[in-house]
Image 1 (cartoon, helix red, strand yellow):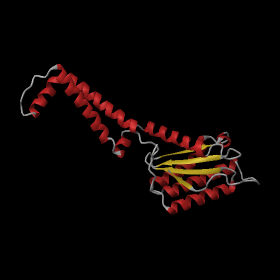
Image 2 (image 1 turned 90 degrees about the vertical axis):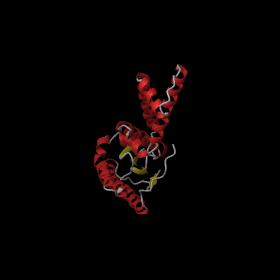
Image 3 (image 1 turned 90 degrees about the horizontal axis):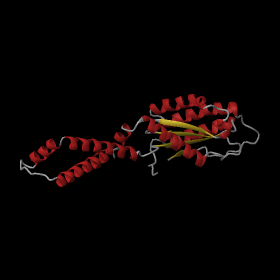
Image 4 (image 1 turned 120 degrees about the vertical axis):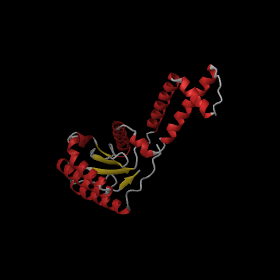
Length: 229
């Protein structure tokens, strides 16, 4: 999936988040990875679903009220009447339905409208799936003690996910990350995504330090830097 790199995060945001991760990991054997993206999915299937629904409703309307639409065509053609055969009417019907589908699909190429018409549950599921996919690729089982945790923020969906490796998930219930999520989303809503990620990382560090305090041998196994996709 080709997702354009976001532009909301400044160089100062990168410095802030990297410092927050490094500071949090000073007190824990846990490894925090931060990823921010503009959009987790293009939702092209949602645009096609809406286009298909509009085309179907148009088809039902045309088939139910054929005289009205034939009269409309006659008026638009200057009043010249024409006795349509069944084949001609079917051809007109198919053409009109196809135009409805294509027109709706083209309108929904505008991302804000497509996002507005995408069900919330669908957006939440896509963000969660994207976070898990990225976690499996870059974080899961990448540390010796299975103590990696991913903080994932998807800007346009206004959604974040925290996905933890095996050792962490076995001790820390998902709801424990609530303070980190609140800290993140409050700052994002205020227009400060970098500060939000840094604040969330600090809260995650507190949780990790409680359950996975720093040991004698604590190498930095995963990158501290903020990753933009």
